[in-house]
Length: 220
Image (cartoon, rainbow, N blue to C red; front, side):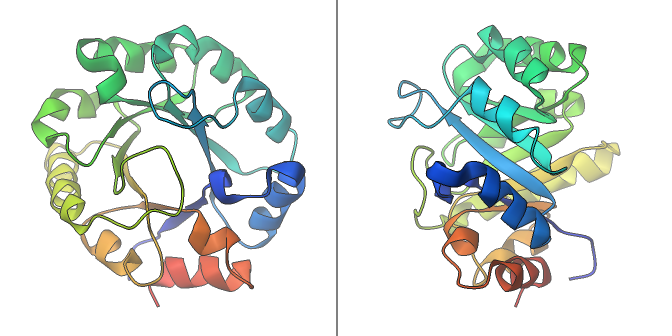
């Protein structure tokens, strides 16, 4: 791999009883982002954490906080997540639909980088017009809700399509992938155009997380 790949360990797979320590651990191990999966039990069938967790983790280390909102009506919470210290706020097309562009602009209005997310079964055509507004596009390679799921390789076609759109238009936009990413498939994701790899179990389930992050970054 020649380009610089960023690794974003998903705190969904961390030990919730010691999140501050887990943040410090992944930063020492060489992570670039901390990926925070915010789930409301409505948009997805799971509940994780919210605004206070983001605010508290902002005090720990210097990792970029990549806040992935898997919630209904995300526009109602953008201001609170921005003020809590989110560096990126990504919202689902499936939660916003026709309001997506407005929600992305709302995020930017708080000085936070914005991104959109699509599920594995959402066509790229649904979000193509909004990519120009984004600092990040996140492709889900599992259906959101739970960690430890198996990677869906068919989404790599979506990654390639989005990469073409970004490159052909010269957009300053990262392409991120999330779901079942591990050392066996990370190189496929990078070859499909991804810049940021979200990995939960592959990092927090490893005996040596520094090696796990290094291996994900280098594709071996």
